[in-house]
Image (cartoon, rainbow, N blue to C red; front, side, top):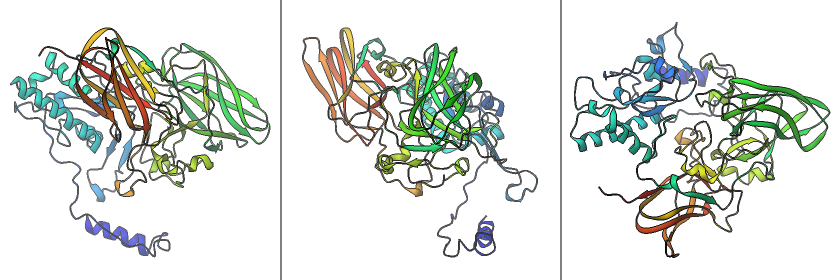
Length: 524
C-alpha cells in the first residue's frame, strides 16, 4: 500500500495534468498502519443481508440503525481491473436486529462493529463508524441487561426483556428508525404544553442572499394538514417569464426524496425584486410528512435563500457519477457554507454557491452548522413546530421535524416551554434533548471549525417547578451547556408545573428543543 501511495503521489506531482499546480505541495504525512476494511465476521441468529437493508425490513428486535450506502470494494482490491469500487445509495435508513449482534453458538458472546453477523454486501453499509458506534451502544445496553437478569444473550431477543432494552436505548437518546415507544415513567405526554412563541414561515423573513435558477431546484416542505392551496416563493426576476413547477409527495418510508407527483403548473412572473409569488397547488394530502416543491430551470429568476430550522431544506440535481449511483433520487442536498467555493465531496463537486449578502457573512463562522432553504410559505400554515412536538415520542426528524422551535429572538427575554398537570406529581428527574444540528455534514476532522460549540444548542437555561401551594422554585440553572442530552436528577413532591427557560444559544437566533421528559417517582 505504501508503494502504491507513493507511486500515485509521484504521478500527481511530476507527470499528471495537475503537476504545475502541485509544484509547491509536499506529502506531509502517510499512515504507517493500514486500516483493514473487512476480516472475519461471526454468525448470529440472523445474518443481516443486502436485501434486509435495501428493503428496510422492520425487525421486531431492532436496536440500532444505519444509513450508509452499499460501499462495495472489489475482491481484487487495487489490482482488480474488471470490477470498480461502487457506492450505491440506499432508499433510506434501515434497522439492525439484536439477533445479528450475538453469537448463535456461544451463549455469552456479543459483537459490534465490523464483525457482526452480516453478509459481505451488508457489511459494506454497516461498517462505517457512526453505525458501529450505534451497534456498540446497543450491545453495551444489552450486555448490562443480560448481566442484571442473569440470562444469556439469546434470552434478550424477544418479549419484555427486549422491550426494556429498546426503551432504555431510546431514553439514552439512541435512535431506532421509525420505532415508537413510551419511555417508562415519563409523565410529560400527560401534561398540557405551552410556549412563549412558535416559529412560523408566515412571519417576515431575512434574506441571506439569492441563488440563480440556472438549473432545477427543489425545496423540502413538512406538511401536516389534509390539504394545501398554494405556496409562496420569494424571488427576483430580471424579465417577464414563466415559472414551471411541480409538487411531489415523499415515499412512505420517511426518506427525503420525491416519490409521487401531486400537482404541476406554470405561472407568469413579472420583472422585479423580492416578490412573493403565489404558486397554486390545490391538492389533498393523504400522507403527512415530507413533500417537495420542484422549480424548473429559468435563467431569469433568482431564488432567495434563508436560514431555516430543521424540516426545510433546498436541493439541487446530483452530478452524474457512475461510481456513486443513486437509483432512488436524482437530487442531493449537500450545500456550501458561507464563503466556501467548492464542496469537499463528490456529491457537491459541481454546485455553485449562492450570492450571499452582508447579513449572511455576519454568520459565516457558524454557517456550516445551519440549515438553509428557499424562502417559502405554505398555505394553510403548517403546525410543524408546535410546543406539543417535545412529547411526540420522536426525538429527531422522521417523516416530520419533531421539535419545538421558537420565533426568531435576541433572547433579551427568555424563550420558554411549560408543562402542567391537573394534579400534583412527585418527580425524580427531567431530561431535555436540544437541537444539535443533526443535518450537519461533518467533514474531515483535520479541517477544524471556527466555532467550538454547535450554534443550535441552548447554552444557558433554567428549569423551574411550580408546586401545588403556588411556590415556584428553580431546580436547575445552567450557563455554559454544549450538550444535546441534558439530564437532571431531582427529588420534588407536589409539582403541578415545569417551565424550561432558554436565555441563550451558541449562535442560533431561536430556541429549538426535540424532547422534554419528566420522570415520576415510582416504587422499585
